[in-house]
Length: 239
Image (cartoon, rainbow, N blue to C red; front, side, top):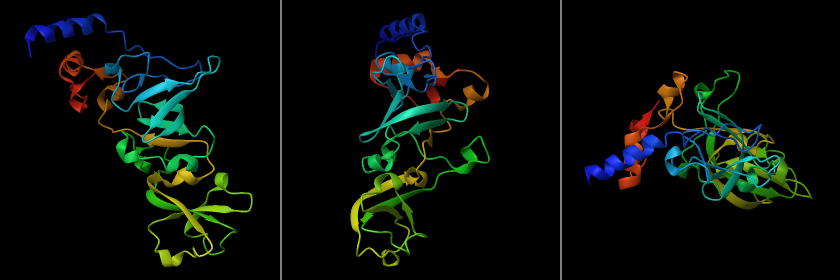
């Protein structure tokens, strides 16, 4: 690679140092800054891959949207950059509706453990694999091994999520129909709750946020990313 080409991009990015200015989708929305970027507003080097956010088309009260693999759309209520937690909400207040399409292993986010949370009174997430069943009535002996999915129940049927850690013989499934399996999801996703927390890797921008500074890609990393397609890593962050 020519040194002159690299120098050109270094000078270009130095002149455009403010193109990653923090922004919001609305006055009350969360601040969007590195490692996140707002699609169609920030250049690609303003965020990490998988950290792209977008705004809803509602111009008066736009919401912040995050797309998770494979085809899950959630609303972003808050982003805690210091604790590296993103608070998400299902648009229809029913996460289980989308869980069959969720693959967190392909996303840069994981469910937080208790020690990752800023508030010691909050409980961390238990992540597991589940089978979702539709039953004609309430199975009386399912309470200890299952979670009723309230938002999917009704109209003469009850929907339950059963963790794969339980042996199948413990679950009386004869009168129930298995709907689908979900993999590596937080247990809290089955609750009738408005908010779910996910964490991104602690190494990303950890030092900068601890010092009360904003994090960004270094100018050299930004130039290399454009010239040779370098993906961002923990070593290319700067304050």
